[in-house]
Image 1 (cartoon, rainbow, N blue to C red):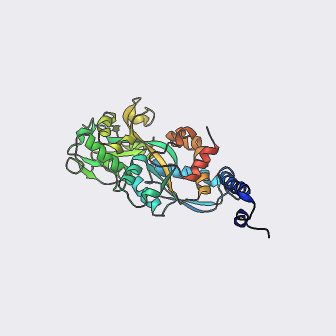
Image 2 (tube, rainbow, N blue to C red; image 1 turned 45 degrees about the vertical axis):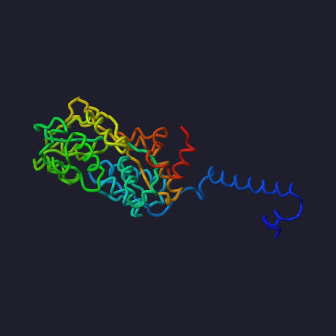
Image 3 (cartoon, one colour; image 1 turned 180 degrees about the horizontal axis):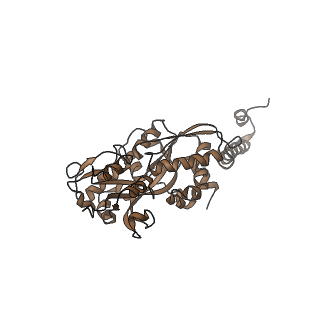
Length: 339
């Protein structure tokens, strides 16, 4: 066996030779790092084992998106056993992924920012895989309701989403923007989309908030069984942004007439939207994360035929994952697949 690099560096031969050897060692290290970044991440590129995705309520778009993404992964990575876990929503998903009970999760950007602001367990380990589609905030009432704007909810029974949901987080902020106190001015019904439509249909509540992709299946089903309407929320954006830094994740949006055709009757509804992120933690396997990222982008049109907003996911938008930095596996994919 020949001499080691350390022994070579200290053998006689003058400073010129030592400088040359040190330069060679440094060059080798840089080339090794470059090859790690540019070459495939080992093996044949295929993954195996179990991977868990935390989605959302069973009748929401998070769950539908997760099901469609699982189909894509089954095609691209047949060795993976992909499990979908329902949840109460964004905040619950962040808890699951940081606690190691899920590998990937969907969460709204405002919930991620709040989780980080509050330094909840594992906040510093969160990383993004992709920006997905936008959630649209929907305030649903019966068509004969006197509610024409959010301020009209004073004194009424309002479905606000489950504790731990992104819906409840944004509902609190919207009620405040409308001049209402969450605890004193409405009767908050802390239930999720699995039960709120039926409660509204049976007039056990007067309204409910929902934040989800368009269309949301549970709202579509309700429209088939009851005469409902969507209350415009776009006028609250200024007051919402005045609440501070965490409100900057909300933007003005319009629910197009064909989102719920029988409800909107050729009328667009001004509202607010917030981006959804696919998140993981920094400990997740870079090879697996790269593969998941690839499937998200590759399947955007197929998923978009069901979750219409998913058609907007592409390389130009997927990398805008504020407030999270990209996971190294996702960053590697985007770097290789420049638009």
